[in-house]
Amino acid sequence: MNKRISSPKRMQDVIRKHQFTLKKSLGQNFLIDENILNNIATSASIDENSYVLEIGPGAGALTQVLAGRAKKVIAVEIDRRLEAVLADTLQDFDNVSIHFGDVLELDVAQILAQECPPGTSVTVVANLPYYVTTPILMKLLTGGLPIKTIVVMIQKEVASRLQADPGEKSYGSLSIAVQYLAEAKIVMTVPKTVFVPQPNVDSAVIRLDVRPQKKIRVDDEAFFFKVVRASFAQRRKTLLNNLMNNFWSKERKNDLLAAMETAQIDPRRRGETLSIEEFAALSSQLQKMKE
Image (cartoon, rainbow, N blue to C red; front, side, top):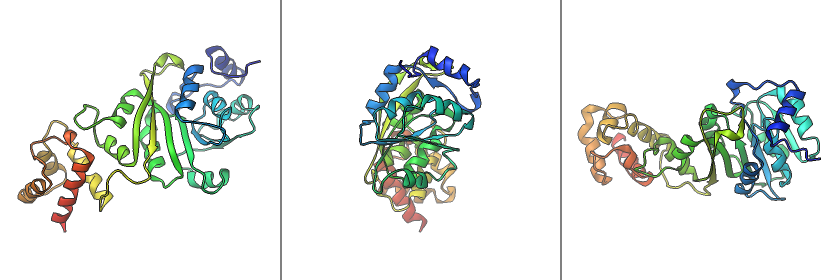
């Protein structure tokens, strides 16, 4: 008997059996398409040597696919009500361990140290709730964790922002923050019809390959990202106006113009047209002016 729950009927049977009610506040939309689940695992390059960190296993549909391919799956689930559901759906897999708690609050480094051999590189696979996508991704990317690849299902619009290039409508401070740390590529789009219940928007699966070294070298990351965020404060304003209104003293306008000239950046440009390298050059010059 096929015990996979990646179909509407099997998913509904499991939910009904355990009298489980989905919480909209937790972004619980369970994926029920076998082909998409398999494609996610394939996109993450999961094989018999892989150690996988899954965030938000839900009822375990994706977990089943991952566990069937990977050496080990370490799942983190915020909703302890799913304990009995997961014990049921994952009973045939002895290579899955489940940690209950909020991934934003848990010590993920300690969990991975307990579950994986020293020196192991981990692949993250997740169907992330839309409302916490950005904080979870930034924790994974900036937390010093042994992660080599992240493959996540997220809101299609957010995926576009992560992958966007300078000059594109979706390009912004989030694009720069993610691409500074990883290479981003959308691997598939996913219609809302393959979830129970259906979300209001379509989704996309994006792959982030963590860079061995950051995309560029900056002297002060905090200062660099302050410049970036200020540059996108009001998208229709020029770079000069945004920096003057949100970052730089108006009394020192000439210093700002001088820094832009040295960095070879036209002050009439908008932030969305600047590459990461140009932001680095600008922040470097502005930092010298601050000193």
